[in-house]
Every structure is written in structure tokens, then in C-alpha cells.
Image (cartoon, rainbow, N blue to C red; front, side, top):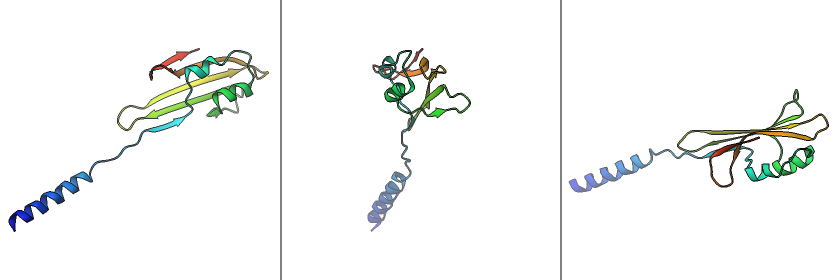
Length: 115
């Protein structure tokens, strides 16, 4: 009888401790822009061509209509948040002038700078 109580108590404690673990999820938000996609861009492209390659920008500021911002953040379940931002600039005619910011390389997961 005593061993049955001990086994029951140990089983209950094991189940109780197992329920204490917290499940965490990786959170990915924004636009993922790779170096391969940026290599397809060249000065003089219009806004529709850029949108076809990179997708819709996360931010189009009404006070800076010729500037598109593509932002990305990745929060792993356990670790530090990684934030990247790509800025696409157009001239008054809607032609691509420059691309600046942090880009995910296709070869390695580290961030590189492209201009």
C-alpha cells in the first residue's frame, strides 16, 4: 500500500513538472529580401518592376513618396531579435536610384550590407 502511494505521488509530480515547460515560437515579420533579389535590381527600373521583384514595401511614407522601406524582424524562441531594413529610393519620375540596407545572403544566414 505504501509503495502504491509513493508511485502515485511520483507519477503526479512528474506530470505536474512536465506541464511547467513553456512552448515558445519563432516569430518572423516583414519582408524577407535576399541578395539574389537585390542583384536583379538596377538603376532606372520603374516602381512596378521593383514591386514585382521585391513585393510590396512595408512602409510608404506619405511625406517621402519616393522612398520605400522593406523591414524584417526575426525573434527566435530563445535568443536575440534580428532586425534588417532595406531602403529603396526613386527619383521624381519613379525610376530606381539606389538601394541601401541590410540584406540576407543566400549562402549564409548572416546579414550583409548592400548599396
